[in-house]
Length: 160
Image (cartoon, rainbow, N blue to C red; front, side):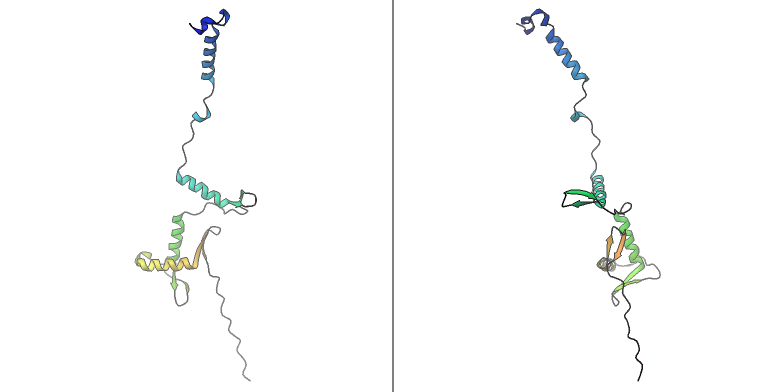
């Protein structure tokens, strides 16, 4: 025996009507949020770049537990590794480490790094990295050693 046959006569068409109404409402309803298409996921490089840019302009506040914007964020984008490496090579082309004076000596004509042996380039790069560091705020290599002051010579004494 059918369920609709047990219902009183005015309600027999109600089950069909309820099913039809449910199907109609379901077809007109928007799809659930999980079924919506999302944008393509970001690549690792894009995520790294966004993270690096964020860390340049924000700092972590321990007391409040929040990321706060830096007071003086660096202007513009930071240089790429290739640009930093090129600047290092330009410095090494134009300067030479002098062991006797323990400082970098500028060269008049530029030299070609390709004429140096690997050991010479490695030694000069290590000497450069001992005396310089990369400063993101300045956007360039900074000398670690303060400028040397000329030695003061005592004034000549008059002969008695």
